[in-house]
Structures are given as structure tokens and as C-alpha cells.
Length: 316
Image 1 (cartoon, rainbow, N blue to C red):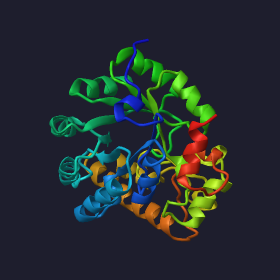
Image 2 (cartoon, helix red, strand yellow):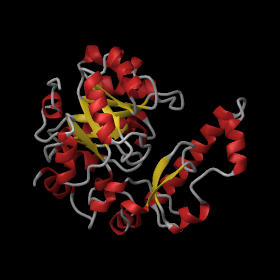
Image 3 (cartoon, rainbow, N blue to C red):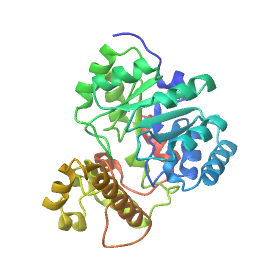
Image 4 (cartoon, one colour):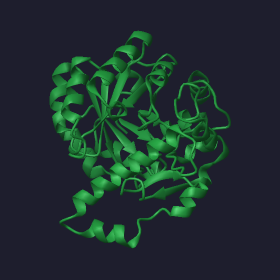
């Protein structure tokens, strides 16, 4: 197997870990705590409603932390804010960008001259080779144990496949919730890992106490795939409300989704409706709970500071 740069070398960090960008969950306090604990961290640009708020958050994180700042950009057409968000990243000289759900070509072209590294979410070899050809600095290999929009392949399949056929580093996303998991995934040839779900129930998180406690009370067997949230499969906690509404689109939603003329608009409306439901669930106590999380919440036993979560993750 070829020797490639490790994540610690790529980002000049102590431990080969990125606190994954989590929609609605990651905030500036979490970023600061993670970066000051020897790992990297990334935040979705879409967690900010305005460009002014986004710029202020980057300034706050930079002023209070020493680690590299990462930003997650949704690069497909469903995100009309992307060009402005990308310009802000360049203006603020963030350290790296993680691209999701589309072609990273425009991002890579703009970031390379600015010295900003670009890591791209991929779920298969074909797309991994495409982003490498475009000039990506690393691949985020999203496997079937990831939270949110998971991939289809196991880390045992995906990591060696990408390592053998790509020359850039492979960062694994999914299935790491403790130190044993970290060592196992690194042993498969990963340059580093992207870890999200175990950070939801942190002191620094602004989500509701009910959401945090759900991550403590539920485990890996309580995670189900739902197409009700965004129209594409997404991992959620199987609360009584999720059991009541089901995890699959109903016959009418499926029918509309198959219509060539209506497909685009139905998907967009499903996404907007699902995101509003997630936001309401994340920040308020409601019986209509749709909480996004991955199976690694199995390792969440209490609500703790991020520095403690990182300490236990990186130490035997």
C-alpha cells in the first residue's frame, strides 16, 4: 500500500480526527472546544442564515482557538447560497473545506490559489477518482456506518478500495465512537477519521436537552434509515414519533417523486419541510421528534465537555 500523508500532517494537528460538520448541531463553541483539544473541526456554512453571521462565527472561532478551521459546503444547485459562502471562505482564509452533494470543481478552482485544502465526500470509487482528477486534497469516504446521509459500503470494503485506486489520502466517515474503533479504522488504511454523532450530547452543543438525552438513552440498534426527512435516506433515532409516521415516503409522495416534471420540485419541498422538522426537534421540546444521529451514539453515556469526549477517543 502506498504511503500517503496522514490527516495530522495534512492539517498540522495532534490527533487524526475531524469533528464532522453536523447540520443544525455544530456551532462556534463546539468548534473552539474541538480545535483546542488537538483535533480539527468543520461546521456547515448552512448553519448560518446570513453571510454576516457566518463571517462573525469564523472570526469568533479563529480568535478563540488554535486549530484548523473547516467549513462544509453543499455544492449542488439546492444551495443557492454556495457562491457567497465560498467567497467568504476565501476572504476569511479558512484552512479546509469539505464539499458534499455535488461537483467540487468550482470550489477547488477557487481554493487552490488561496492555499485552502479541499476534502470531498464520496461514497464510491467512481466519484473518488473524479474528485481526485479535479484536484481534491483528500477524500472523505462516507461508509454505511455514518450518521446522516450514509454510504452503501462498509469501511472494510470502501477504505482499501479507495486507497488502492487513488493517490490522495482517504479520511473515513462513519463507525468511530471510541478509541478501539479509531484504531480499527486507521488499521484499514485511513489517513484519519471524521466523527460526528458522539459530539451531539456535549456541553457546548446548543441542541435541546431532550435531543442530548436521547443520544444517551438510545443506542446503535435504535438508529433507522428514513426517507421522510430529506427525500434521500438519512439516519434518525427511532423515537415513538418516528415509529408512528414511518420511515418511508407514502404512496403519494413516491408517485410525485417519480414524475419527471415534478421530481425536482417535490425533492426540494421534501428537503425544506424535513429540515424545518429537524430544526424544530433539535432546539425545542416537542412530541414530534425527528433527531438525526448515527449508530455511534452507542458510546454516549452522559452529557460531557468536548475535551473529555476527545480525550477518551484518542487515548487507549
